Length: 346
Image (cartoon, rainbow, N blue to C red):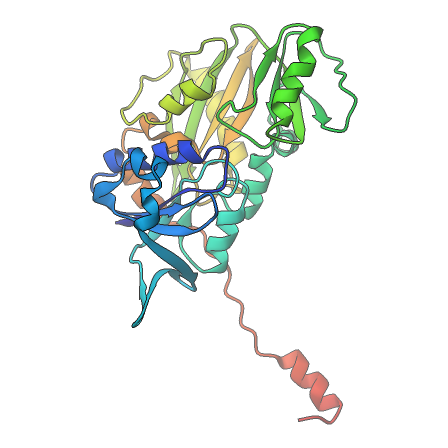
């Protein structure tokens, strides 16, 4: 299998994407990997797989790599004597945050007819925005954590009891997230969040809540990961999640009974099917008084949540063989020809 790893992007999560991409080299050992880096100014570079490391990007050395252009069917290296295509079978979108998770990359790949693993445009739009995620889950009968919504121009008032957690609507990796324990802390937390987004979600902060992560995809059958109970402190901040994204060894399954496991798996399937076809996603759930509540959808999880699967590479290969395809449309201009004929024009 020849995989192109697409990473970087114009995103607050740009560096996390680099960490995830480097981790794939340790995980996808049987595959031939091609690394395509998207710089912060949205240029494409072909990165030497043997030389990839974090310093290559922090130092700016990547700019010495070959710059790529996009054409129908794939990426190309343009030279004095013509254009040479970059060979791969499927692209894996590993751009976290804006560009990768908001639908831009998916739309681009579909437009240029490049096979790719990633949520499609509609799924990206709904999962990238935490408010829209709430609407999606509620429409599917999946319960979510209670919330209030505030935009930057709104009056800074909330009705729910403290403590609460403030989250930018369009960001992951705990960027801009704060726990607010009393009213006097609200203004500062909103200032922090509004540095990254113009809208926020406010949710109750539930001390000691049980949290479980479920990842998976649908190939010709459901391929679900183990259910993980992450080791939680008060909450995982950016730095802890940054380190977490480099995980490449499988973790232990949560010690839960079969009934709860089925509830979590069924909620995951309801969210995934069929909107997220062609992607590997992770859903994070809270369990409160035996009730499963969706916390967040991770449309492009850190390191693709490889550490939750016993056969991650095999699953990626199977997914590559069952990617959704756009319906071909034949344009024959019959309508225009009929109008021209009716007007007596050739």
